[in-house]
Length: 437
Image (tube, rainbow, N blue to C red; front, side):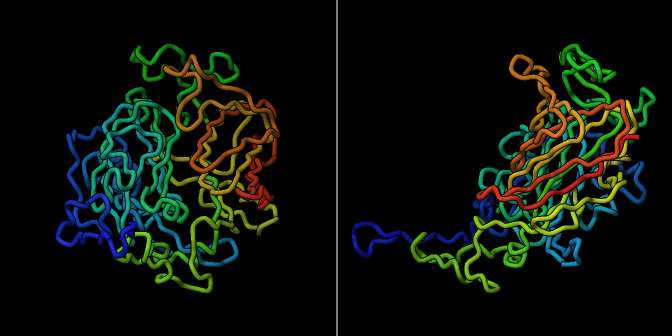
């Protein structure tokens, strides 16, 4: 950096030999710190998966294993191959080589969660548990915690709801390329079979304040301090997960090198750094502020259509229990019966503007992992009805949970409209089958 005095410069100091001191920012990481105040994990889900999913194991006691940057090519709807960075679980054969999105992690409220995370492929990486409130070193935000390496994250969830986990290093690229998965915090007894229920199936429960919505049966009020694991929860019969995403193929062509947008550092920061040394293709310098998606997906399912068009995913799409913490029957395209309670969990993983329209009235019960009207938020917000055909606008990382119960059969679609984040121009309309029999 130059100052007013000509020729006065401050050179960069080399980190060679000091890697452990620079574990927060050294690329690639040479060391990972131990988890401070490490507690015994009490999460029952890994043991349940090992006991109920064919071929699954629990390599570490009661610990969720997360491996990330499994880079691979996946085919799009038109046969074009696109590079993805995937998250996998080596304890589950179907998830061992990574999936898009990453496996859904379900955790009962109040347990001590351990996530043993390894970074593979193009480093560095972190895992940020989006919406959870861990200690700073377990929060996984790059440069404020550490890059991994190999690290065991530890936290204890306090609020039932819909969250997600993602790499928080070079976040704009890594999130777009697929380094994320859904995270569901369930009632404390969700994996406890003592009351005779099938813990790997439905009905299940989620947090909600439905005192003003008697149409949904089974709601339990009370207060969270009562010790009742079902206080302020409601059962649901059908669960759907909509992870709405978009893909810019130019990003994939240009950013195959993890350091594509990284400068080659000179000895004067911001003065003689070279941004063009990693250029590939015919685009000269590639930058992440230029985003124009040309493929559109929901929960890993391609909408088979091009920009400007409309297309539907197929009916009958469900998420295998191997990718859903052992729970069978989570849906993408909805197939339910009249008078069943349907829970739709939505995550916007897109970088453009999203508008979701349902063919039936829905009740919004939660935003961004927090249930509306459930203490300690009962004085400040409450569930509300969204009428059929009313757009729900969503932006990147936003979650929205809605409940639906209809007394009439229907064979329709929910609509997911993609609009450009700068010009607001229409890009695509994706349709998700919505069948109630």
